[in-house]
Image 1 (tube, one colour):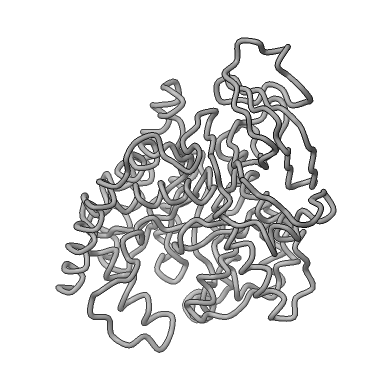
Image 2 (cartoon, one colour):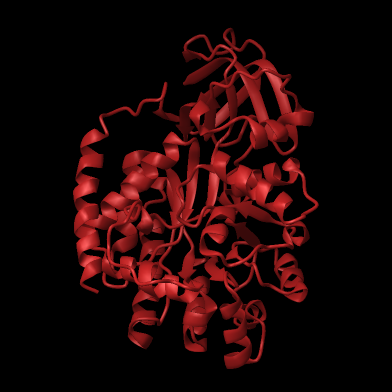
Length: 441
């Protein structure tokens, strides 16, 4: 049992700040929150936090761990005047170049860096067309070794190998779901990872693929995780090829429900947003990636009943992502204030609840003990009414002191339990080989 003493307790939704509180943790659950709990739990291991902020763990709602070794990439890349050429010249070459070693280190390093930035869970979306079978188990290994909670899936597509590639992607998603189901009675560490049924984007998945996705969804009980309308091309392709909006097309195949995660959605119509809301699906907003890819801005964030924050492969620093999401929104003339983006950050926990079937996102008895601890000294009062403002204008990942996932300290006093320097050294070698492989494609 673990007892966190003298905390400043933070909740995101509803916003709340309570000083001088204690948190008692037993196994993976919070069992009590209150004033001095020492007498109630005299045998607990005590951690004295001296007023540090303790908040529900931060969740990245959409990421691409396969891109973890692309930072500073040194490979010949043709000019990319538009989004589709960026996919073809960069990302679709990178994912084809991945092998087992580079994928393992990409996933492991991304997991470690997510934790270091205060993230307790990441929802991943994976692609490696030349390494489909078993690829999700490789990523799962990295999650578990780092101690990070998360989800992953394989982005089913026909962009490289037609029907055969579609079938292999579907099979990988189903096999991975079965692997997870088989481990439900194992240790907490083994149960850190869940899954979606993945697909790349509607413009690379024909109707036969959507049929297979619907069957996989029904067989496994999981939800769909897919890019939609990241670029205008996805919409125009759907209108030209199928005579309907992409979201309506997904709904036609029964692919929308409360476990559905739609990434980006920049160019969805009002009818499509209403349909997503009706189906209780979630939008993952990825502000920095949208800016980097120059695909436009989502002017309809206020219209979604459930929107969360993701990074689309640009790390897992959710403090940074919240700031960019808010500032870009203000730059675009949007009406929302920081409290709306704080709710989006909180909403990542709703995604976890829907998929892990356990409570997340509150400092309260019965909730999962996924916690982010920050050493933040504010020059102004910190209270519920201005908490969102502190995250938008002050608090950042440099303040992350410790991280607890499933009741375990996986990062304490800015240190991991073991030396990670050798892992980074091996990752650099794997990255150099990956870039060389890209040059041959």
